[in-house]
Length: 207
Image (cartoon, rainbow, N blue to C red; front, side, top):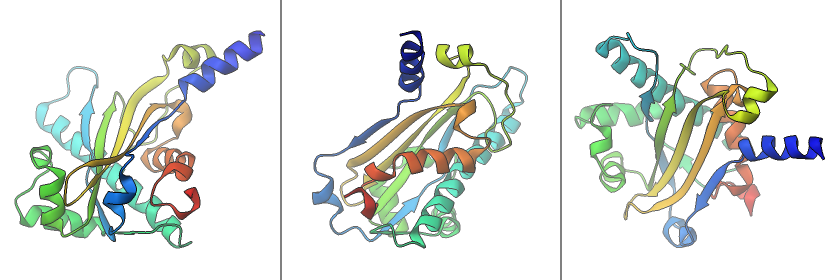
C-alpha cells in the first residue's frame, strides 16, 4: 500500500497536461508549414542580477527552447513522421528582425499577425518559467521526498500551436520541469516531446 501511495504521488507529480482543439482537423487540414518562435521567458533567479543581464538571459533561454524544438522536429522529420514542414528557425528570426519584431515586443503581436508576417500556416510558441538556467547543464541535487513534495521543481514550460489564418489555439502542452526532466534544454524538450508524440496532432504515428 505504501509503495502504491508513493508511486501514485510520483506519477501525479510528473503528469503532463495536453489540450487539443476539437476543431483541430478543420483548421489544420491545409497546414503545410509551421514557424517555431523564440519562447517568452520568465526568470525567477536570486536577487542581484542586473536588468540588462537578466534581459539577455531571458532571450538566451527562449532561443534555446526554439532551437531544441527545431532539433527535435528535424530529427523526427527525417523518419517522415510529420504531416507538415517547419520553417528554418534562422529564417524565422531573420524575418522577425526585418519586420521590427524583437524578443522584447514579440508578445505584442498576435499569432495571426506573426503567421502572415512569416508566411506560414501556423505558429508554435509558448512560455518558459524557470528558477535556474536550463540552457546550461542543470546540476541541482534532489531526493525522492523532495521530488514527491514538488520541491525539486524549477520551472514550467508551456508549448502552444495556433492556426495562422484565424489565430485560434489548436494545441497546448504544459509540463512542470524538475531534475528528472533532463540535464539541459535540448534533453528536456526531447524527452517531453517524445512523451507527447502520440498526442502531437501533426505526428502521423498518433493516429
